[in-house]
Each structure stands twice: as structure tokens, then as C-alpha cells.
Image (cartoon, rainbow, N blue to C red; front, side, top):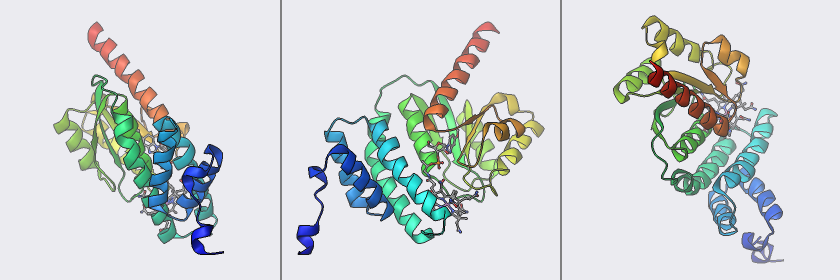
Length: 234
Ligand code: B1M
């Protein structure tokens, strides 16, 4: 059989087959195929958030498992991340175009020593979609980056992301510095990332740990509502 005959036509697959194929394509770091898959699912009227969570995050979970088990290595995972970002770039304007009134401002970044940014980007996208203004600090952020930007931007929320057990303690450094400077209560501090949990969030003095981007949005809304109520009362 010729190579052409072997080619899979994504648009001819049913939804389940297409999502399975996207898992394979993400695994193989095939950015163009991932972009095509996302566009096909959009044409089939899938909600952008569903595409994000079921097709893209689902695929990245498989990559993560094989990375952990030593089946995939950094260069391959980088390609997978690049493919995922291609798909996210298509979805971003759709998640953001809600036209909702601004409900608050968040400064978000990945902590010092950590270059993982997919989860942080996803949270930023979802927050924007929910009507928050988001200032993205990128990766590898030291205390000053968070605090200086939160101050100059007049942020309501400081969001921190960490994907490594070695970098997550840095979140406490940021929060402790806020306490030392007497500004801890000026901000809602939300933290997230795969190795964290609620207990860790509490132990470092964050306002909340957010399991995923949807929880981050809900939590941010709740805290903003409380803040507005306090302001109205006081
Ligand atoms: Co890295 N890596 N990585 N990696 N990587 C992990 C995290 C790891 C768990 C893989 C594994 O072993 N199974 C492991 C960490 C082990 C540990 O510490 N316990 C690991 C390791 C070891 C490493 C290196 C040290 C590998 C090496 O060099 N030997 C190295 C470290 C580099 C560094 O940061 N200094 C490294 C490098 C990389 C790549 C560069 C190749 C690439 C990152 C590319 C990029 O981000 N641009 C990469 C990737 C892609 C991963 C995995 C496979 C996937 C992460 C991801 O994007 N997930 C990851 C395995 C895994 O997590 N299962 C792994 C998808 C994303 C949507 O989920 O980020 O969890 P997540 O975000 C979620 C929630 O956590 C939450 O919401 C998001 C959306 O729902 N959330 C927040 C995240 N941040 C939030 C912030 C908030 C709220 C919610 O603020 C309010």
C-alpha cells in the first residue's frame, strides 16, 4: 500500500475516533494535525472548553504518564507541548470572546525555577473568558516579579503555578514576603499545579488551591464576590 493510501483523513473519523487520533497526534507532536483536529471538532459544534479538556488535556495526560515512566523524553514532550499550544491558540479567542464585564484583575505566573506553562496559560485563558483581566508574567518568576506587577497593575488576585515538587515551595517564599511587607491581605492568592493539593495550599498560607482551570475561575469569582461584599459593608 502506498503511503498516501495509509494516510488517515481526520475529517472522515467519527468523534470518538478523532479524539483517539488526536491523542496519538499529540503524543507524536504533530502540531498541524492537532490544529486540524481542533478545527474539525469546532465545525462539529463541540464547545471550545470540551475540546480543551477532552481532546487536548486528555492527550497530554497520556504524554505525562509515559514521560513519568521513562518512555518519552524531554524533546518528545516539548514537541507534544508545542502541538498542544497550537490547538490552544485556536481555542483562546473563542474562550475569551464572552464580552463579559471585567470582574477583577489577576497577575499569574509560573514560579522561579519552573518552565512549565501550559496549565498556567490555560488558567489565564479561562479567566479571561470569565471576564477577568489577566496579566501573564510567563515562567520562572521570582518574588519581585509577582509583587511589583501586582502593585503596579492594581491586581486583585495573585496566581501562582508550579509543576515540580522542587519548585512548589517557592510559593511560600512569595506569600511570606507578602506577609513581611504587610501586603498579604491586599491580594487574593490562588495557587495551582499538578503536584499541589489543598493541604499544601493551606500550609503555605494561600487563599485557595485550584485543582484545574475551571475551579480557578469559580474560586476567583467567589473571592471577588466576597471582596465586593466586604467593600460594600465597610
Ligand atoms: Co515536565 N515534569 N519536566 N516538562 N512535564 C512533569 C510536571 C512531571 C510530573 C512528569 C513526570 O515525571 N510524570 C515531572 C515532575 C515530577 C515532580 O516534580 N514530581 C516533570 C519533570 C521531572 C520535568 C523536568 C525536571 C524533566 C527533566 O528535565 N529531566 C523538566 C523541568 C524543567 C523546569 O521546569 N525547570 C521538565 C520539562 C518539561 C518540558 C519542557 C519538556 C515540558 C513543559 C513544556 C511547557 O510547559 N511549555 C514538560 C511537560 C509538558 C510536562 C508534563 C508531561 C505535562 C504538563 C502539562 O502541561 N500538563 C508533566 C506531566 C503531568 O503533569 N502529568 C510534566 C497539562 C496541563 C493542562 O496541566 O499543568 O497540571 P497542568 O495544569 C492544570 C492544573 O494543574 C491547574 O490547572 C491547569 C488546567 O486545568 N493549574 C493551575 C496549573 N497551574 C495553575 C495555576 C493556578 C490555578 C490552577 O493559579 C491560580
